[in-house]
Image (cartoon, rainbow, N blue to C red; front, side, top):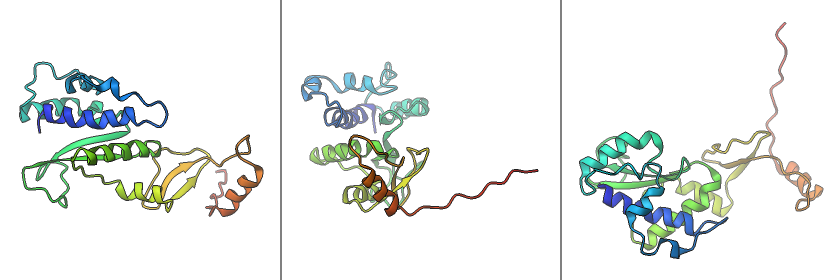
Length: 202
C-alpha cells in the first residue's frame, strides 16, 4: 500500500459519498479533471502528505501511524472508515482469503444514518472492479430487507446496534405526518423491556 494507491481508492469512496448523497448531492462535474491529491485534501489529514514519497509503502505507514488518531482513514469523518490491512500483520482478519503479505481494504461504519452512504460506496467500488471487505454487510442486508429490529429509547444512542438491532430511535409522536393511531400501533407492536425499580438509599 502506498499513499498514491490509497488516495485513489479513498477518492472513489469520497466521490460516491458526496455525489450520491441523499440530502445534498454534489454534481459529478465537481470532481472532473481534479487530481486524487487535490480530492484527498478533504481527508482530515490529507494535507499532511507533503514531503512524503507517494509511492513508498514505508511513507504510507509513516503517514498512517502519525495520523490515524485523527481519523485519517475515514471517508465520512468518524462515521465511515476505509482501512487498509496487510495480511499477517496488525488487525488483519485471518479469514480473509488474501495471500500473506498482500494488502486489502475494509469499509465499515457504526452510525445507522450513514448506512446508505456505505451502500453507495460499495456499489461504486463494485462498478470500478475494486473488492473491499465489509464486515457490516449482514447488517446492511437486514436493513434493506427490513428484517432487523429497531430499538426505542427515550435517549437514542446513534451507535446502538447488534446482530438483531439495526438502529435505535425515539418513540414517534403525533404530528403532521404521523397520526395518533400510527403511534398507538407502534406502541402495541413493540416488545417493551420493563424498567428496573429504583429505591432511594436511606
